[in-house]
Length: 155
Image (tube, rainbow, N blue to C red; front, side, top):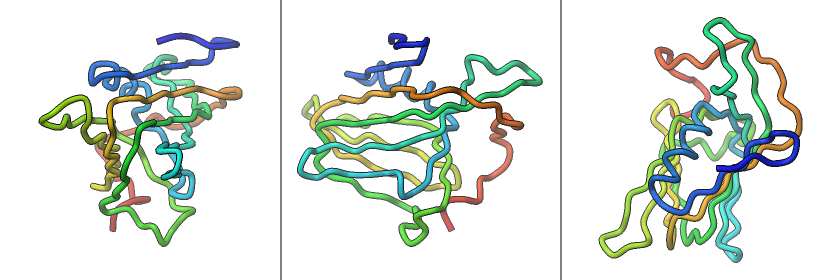
């Protein structure tokens, strides 16, 4: 974990433990379906997210979000389950990143678990991920609430 220019967060994950830290930082990020991109030739999957800044959230606010890029290298395949590809402007809510190792390391599957039961599965040669914040944070009126289902994904 490291901090970049202006105190912006920059994280790198190279194993399952690192990915768990990156997952905590990305928890409750929002993104539009159209902002999930797979470059098959470059074997890279990228996601432009609005990250919720849990580390600055008090019990009653103020709350902040910040633009960030989430990238995964060494990606050989991408599959989505219960994600509406016909609605590119639909917003999705990222709950967690999980690594399922292959029987023969270092490859496996990285699951991007979404609210509403959706997920994106990345088949990877190894864990090679990064999260980088860009720009300035902005105030948001609400803190994510896991007791409510998110309607932007799934059905």
